[in-house]
Image (cartoon, rainbow, N blue to C red; front, side):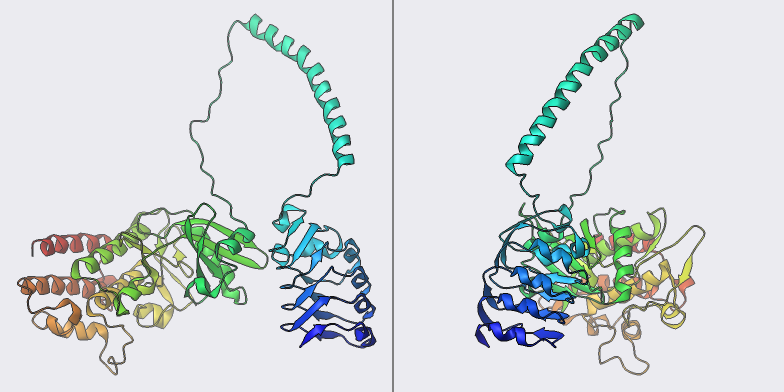
Length: 484
């Protein structure tokens, strides 16, 4: 529908909901609409409406939801809207409004996201807008007050300075100066408004991944720093806990093979983590996309990086961290192809004297340890099992839930049956070239890697090796591979 909204709209006195969104209505909102005092929900979003917001709309005392976003509305937001005591949702984003956003009435509880991308709105910092300029009269009064204050301070300062100098002179020694030798670097704060600007309003064209609890968008800060913004889906109750867990872990741990958290953005209806952007995407992409390829050494380097990250989480932290969801899509690669472990949304921290704990949160099938899948029991040895499965997958290019694994045959059994002589039949065919003069030695190295993977994937948690041993074994194999 198009054209102007007719003044006769005031005849719909009994209407409680009116949704005219996603149309082509133009010109201004008729002031007669203010006569619809029974209206509870009014949506005019995504039209071509112009002009100002009629002051008469403050007479719509029953309004709870008013959406005027994505139009060309100009002028100011009527201060009389403070009377709309039942208004819970008032969205005027993506318009050409200017002037002060009121802080009274229903505005006390409105989110900053409802006022984004306008001409020149101003007001309280909680709306993520600039402060309003002070009128000339107030500015003059403030200047007078400031002048009197400065004069009073100056008059007080002279005798105080004299007394202090006299005391210091009498003591005959200088008081030592306190200096803070440790400079604490605080995290850069990023507002919701800046995140929307950086990601083009969370545009689908910037979407680079989705998970159980939210989506990840690529963004660019004003400083030209590329970022990844993980936005949590707050429709899911578990997303709140996932956000808190990731914040606690990523904001307190530091390792070259862990995803770096730059900061977070959190309010009542929006939660996001701002992460260092990984330009080369995930290990999963490099394993299964036709346009990408990793040779044996690259795959081994990546899996050593992941092992180092796990060694740090399990043995290098004051409280051991269990990742709980190891898989190729959670291994991200920077511009130097260094691997960074990501997605700590369901991770667990072990307390003092704790070696395992129970959880109801289930990770990705195929990668989880038997005791995790059957009893919900997780420990650092659960991560070791998942790492073993991922190590096999990386060199065979077969997912643990591949359709070929049916009945009693699993990825682990398939690899086990191939050792030691038939490793060539399970290794990723892309890694095998008949022209390679060192193929036999390289296959021996891969067989050694698969033995490490099987030691990680032992059915019994007690029989699994730990990640410190894994790092040591894989680094020795890397030396052998270099000699090929």
